[in-house]
Image 1: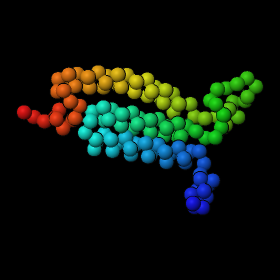
Image 2: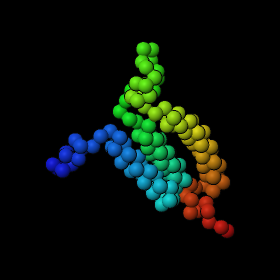
Image 3: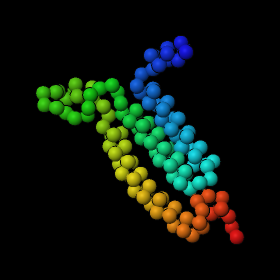
Image 4: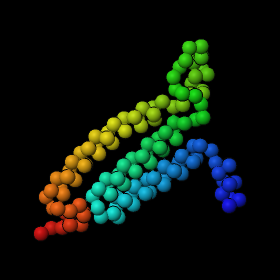
Length: 128
């Protein structure tokens, strides 16, 4: 218990975000490859995407301020102290793409259920 408290106190926000994103990616990959239900695979893909988004946000974080140049702030100070805005823009784009993909995947899963009367991928992929 003392070791855990020591690690938590020594760990900064960025490292905690990287560890959490790694765990989310591992959980998502496990669900995609080892779970038999199509809906659970879709949920696992969403968890995987959340892990990637968190990793991108952690990459762009530098402990600084928001990436908006406010009046009265010099360009040098702004460039040195603001967060990296490209990764945040990528995350916003990824969220929109994930929402669209989720809608398509759920639509396909409805069609699969109507055709096969099950969502087990082992039954759906079985060749007759």
